[in-house]
Amino acid sequence: MEFPVKTGAPASQKTACAILPVFEGRGLKGPAREVDLSCGGLLSQLLRSGDASAALGRSLLVPQLQGTAAERALLVGCGKQADFDAKRVRQVLSTATRRLRETGLKEATSYLTYTRHRGLNAYYAGRVTVEATRSAYYRFDELKTSSKAKDKLAKLAIAVADRRDTKEVRRGVHDGCAIAVGSDLARNLGNRPPNVCTPSHLAREARALGKRYENIEVTVLGQREMKRLGMGALLSVTQGADEPPKFIIVRYRGAGTRVAPVVLCGKGITFDTGGISLKPPAKLDEMKFDMCGAAGVLGTMAALGELQPNLNVIAIVPACENMPSGRASRPGDIVKTLSGQTVEILNTDAEGRLILCDALTYAKRFKPRYLLDVATLTGACVVAVGHLYTGLFSNDDQLADALLDAGKRSLDPAWRLPVDEEYGQSLKSQFADFANIGSRDAGASIAAQFLSRFVGDTPWAHLDIAGSAWTTGADKGATGRPVPLLTDFLLAL
Image 1 (tube, rainbow, N blue to C red):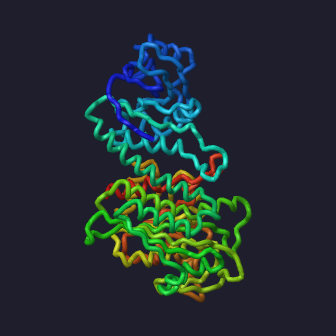
Image 2 (cartoon, rainbow, N blue to C red):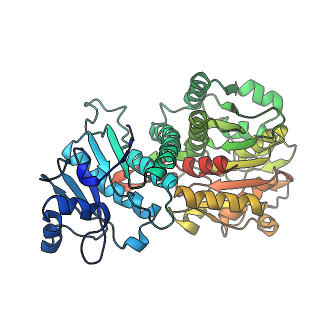
Image 3 (cartoon, one colour):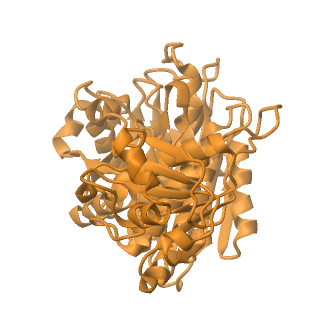
């Protein structure tokens, strides 16, 4: 999809469809008013009759616009102009793209960000337009035998009133397209069924990044190499599965070798049955999404490959299945982690922290500037913050604030939760250094506290995406989060 930037009077811009904002208050404003004057007050008449409305979510397609260069117009309700920020732009664009899909149009021009709005500069006007439109048009149909959807928009022009904003809008378009590439990869990986998206499949997708971008290098370790290193916690999770595990390392080199990297660890459980601590059958199919942490960090690496920023980033993906069998780990087993610490497995369904603890220990060998892990880790996080926010835990206030700010800018929000030492008291074990589960209360913080024991003094953050990685219901599917948050955070560095 192309996103050219246009300048000039709205009424004189040739387009198949002009997407015009309608705000609350008396009369039309901005580009809608300019077009209305050229077409003899038709739009004002539709607003007065109630056919068009400023209410959020309302839209009206006007099939003919005599007196203007636009073939038709889509009037979209935007609420109060004072409240029209990046979040509202995304909401309104979702409404607009739904209507455009119905028409089958291949080209349109958006005037939603034609003039400046609260907290929405030229750069973010371009970026949010691209990300919202690409997200709205995303479809996962690669495994359907019917013909692929033909309703995709080929070109959405972004109109700007001030020519001086053109450069910044184009920069926003460039970054938005890169983030959309990463988000789409994360969605595709998450949506693929577990018989397709195996640990080996994740390794192949990672290697594909290395072929696509010359400054990305990929290494994949197998089970024998993991055993030689001493990754006892990770291997305890995969020992009941027939699918071989993979330990994937993706290096993006955008700065000198002396520049400390940011390391991203993504949980890659490609299917989670719970192991011997078997999960209930309801929504068990959604456990294919348990690798969305891995998908998120690989998507972020794809975005970096497109953007080519001046920094070094390493993604680490421990990938395996958690299956029950005669070889599977049992509650009561004790394993030795790569760090040398021992863990008593009291619940085999608390497996994400077991593969991540070895990944975090391995990551420390790169002496990272920051160490982040991303995981669909706990249902407790969903109970705490629902599906809107990603749970954020950190041992470093500066890092936490930077991630929270990136979440706000990227419309991929996070909420900080505590990870105090006291949360680790219920992890005590009579037989090992500690157990892999503790009290049911504050389960997300307890899981984060478990992970914190493997990072030492490294500035670290844990992103629990159990509530934000996918949606359920009629629109079930991976969201691509937290690719926007992570990419924004890295660009800010």
